[in-house]
Image (cartoon, rainbow, N blue to C red; front, side):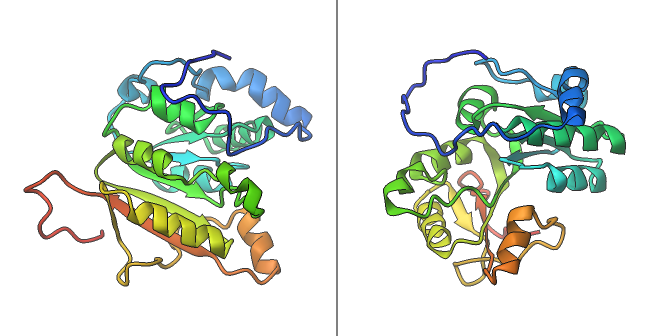
Amino acid sequence: MTDVEHPHPRSIRSFVVRTGRITPAQQRALAQLWPKYGVEFEPKPLDFDAVFGRRAPRVLEIGFGNGENLATLASKHPERDYLGVEVHTPGVGRLLLSVESLGLTNVRVICRDAVDVLEYQIPPDSLDEVLILFPDPWPKKRHHKRRLIQGPFVELLASRLAPAGVLRLATDWEPYAEQMLEVLRACPQLENLSEDGTFVPRPAERIPTRFEKRGERLGHRVWDLAFRKKAPPGQQEGRKED
């Protein structure tokens, strides 16, 4: 894996790489299917038209877990291209198996820290949608600095969204939901799509993740957020959520 020097070096990451059990099938997928669907990390912008072999709306899912939501969306929306970023290899292997079994041609995968990918591989103004579903809430106060949704990261995300591109997030941890809302509101490039300026209803097309299902069993509420990148000056009048 390529080492790179960050413009703003980080000693704190929002994840811990776990050596979770990987099944033989997932291991075979990583060996046999990665050359077809995987994108190696390189510290230079991707040519999405070359990566996907066409020009289409692009959706990025960060931390896709087992990939069930991403694979389902890609199956339902063949007119869109989906790029998944995940650091845990069992989840990558499982998504690769799903993509192959469904015969999907509109999915690519990167196994790398999302900050690296956004800084170096995602061109500015190139994404139509970004999904971040149930990121680790790091509930203990001393760990809050590890949370993914922080001001600099949101500014980086906003710079990669195309004008009118949408950032969607979800969490079942209320204090994190409140922090997300505060951080997103503070980003001048983004506008809240909520009618009351807070949270939005759960998108009907989202597949419940295992974290969401676990939260439901525990009686947790889920908070969804949706923010859109503002259009350039002079093009902002009359815009409504699709």
